[in-house]
Length: 464
Image (tube, rainbow, N blue to C red; front, side):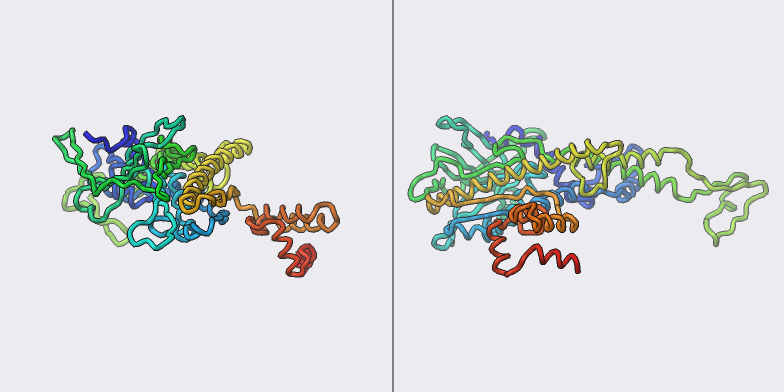
C-alpha cells in the first residue's frame, strides 16, 4: 500500500489543528463545542449551550503571534537582487504576492506552527520571456511525507510529498499530491489520491499519476538537488520540531475552560432566587418577582432570598489570574502588563531574553531559508549573480525611540568634541532617529547636500 503520510504526521496534525483553532479565536472554539470544552457530567444540552456561549476567550495566542511578527517586520529588510530576478521583489510567490507578503506569511507559520516548506519553481504555462522564478509555500499540514538520505557524503532531501490545493477536486474527495524525488536527478510527479474505508478501522489508498513525470532542467542540464527548503525555528531540516506555540496554546485552552466555569458559576449564583416556607400550594404560590409583583402568603408563611456564600468563585478567579500570568511567561508579554507574580527583575530579564531567543532563532532560519532559494533563483537565471543576492532581516525587535534628553546630551557631546560625528550618527540610528538601513556615509552626504548642521538644528529646535 502506498504510504502518503510520514509516521509522525498524524500525531503532529492534532497539534497543528489545535494551534490554528486557538489562534482563530473564540468563534472557532465555540463552534467546535466539546472538542475543547467538554460537557460537564449531568449538565443538560440546553445548560451546556449556555455554559459554552457564556465563556469569554482571552485571545493571547493570536495577539502574541501578531506582536512577534510585527516586531520582525516593523523595519524593512535589506534585500538586494540582481536585475534578472528583480521581479521577485514584487512577485515572489506562485500567487503573485510581493516579497514582503511572503516574509510575513513564512514568519507567521514558523513562529506559531514551527514548520513551512518553500519550493522554488519556474512559471510554465503562459510565462513571458525571461520570467523570474517564484516560490511556492506549503504549510505544515501540507507536508505529508519526506526522506533525507546521505548522497555523495552529504545529507540531502531526497523525497518530499506535498498536498496541493486544487479547486477542481474539492468536492470529489480526491486530493492532489506533488511528489518530488531524486531518481537520481530532480523529478516532479503529480498524483490524484483517494482514500477508501474498508470497515471501521482499515482503509486503502489509491493514487493515479497525472500526466508524465517532469524532469526540470536549467540550461539543458538536470538538477541534482530538490529546490525546496523546510524551515523550523531551529534548523532547515525536514524533521519535525515541537511547535513553538503549543505550550502557550495549551495554557490558553486551560484559561478558556476556567473562564467557562467561572462565568457559569457567576450565572448560577447571581440570579435572584426567592424561597418561601409554610402552607404553600398551587393556588397561593407566588408566580412573579420584582417591584410590581404582589405576594399574598398564608398565615405563618415566611419568605427570603437565597444568597451565595463561600470562596469557590474567588478561587476560580485566582486560577484565571494565575493562568494569565503563566501565559505571560510563555511569550505573551505584549498582552500582559508587568512582571509575573512573585517574579524578580532579574528573572523577568532572563524570561525576556528567552522569548527573544526563540524570535532571534526563527528570524535566522527564515532568513537563511529564503536566501538559499533566492540565490538558487539567481543561479538558475545567470550563474555569476548568486553572490549578488543579499537578504538581511532586522533583529531590532523592540522599539527604542531615543529620549529627548539623551538626544540633546549626544548633540552637546559631539559639539564639544567628546564624540565623533560617526558616533553621533550611529547612536541616532540605534535610537531610531535615523533610517536603520542608511549607511553613515550616505547620511553624512545628505546632511551636507542640505547645507545643514544637524547639531545646531536640533539644539535650536529644542531651545524653541
